[in-house]
Image 1: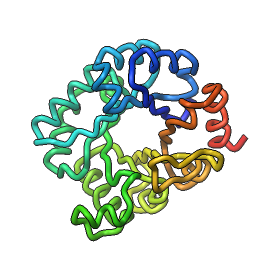
Image 2: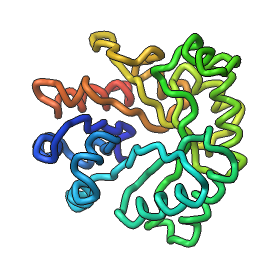
Image 3: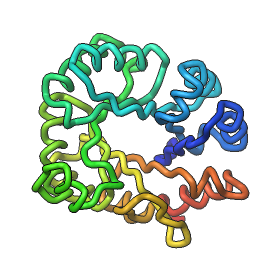
Image 4: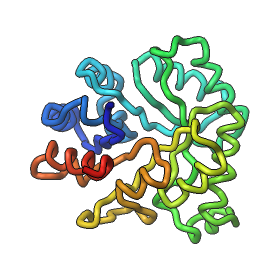
Length: 233
């Protein structure tokens, strides 16, 4: 079984990203390409990662008018990515069109399509500042239900909300959890964090881990540590 760990490639150049992936094993992790790396390096880097047999989560959080997002999701599928995402706050029409843009692809060609609920960097106070009166947990559940109703495969959520989402949305809905830290790891800019074993126990399907692995002296050892924590061995 392939690892549930998705390593966030938070690098500022293609050379650094490729140097890192050459130090780890695609059988031991998947990788995430976010906004900075994609903006600097473009689709060619994604293609190189796919060619190295890595499952790629293209984390660009599309949020625009429905037609624009639908075409962007289809373009992501053309790159051969394993997973991509949109913002649930873009609404039902946007998510429906995004899903329909890849619906005719074969299962092997069709990426997992998930939605971002509430960013793990946002606290209750942050939500209130932008006019959201619900708590983070309430807002996550509301947006996750919207994504499920639109036919998406799952959502990104904090592990603090995973158990309630799993209970409310069932076992088939994919839950991808960032903000994963071990006891010895710094929290950084993540405000709602949980350890890897607890996240899996709460119902997370995949865990996104960045600096604790990418900045480790021996990334493969750090990755193995996270995999052991998940497996309980």
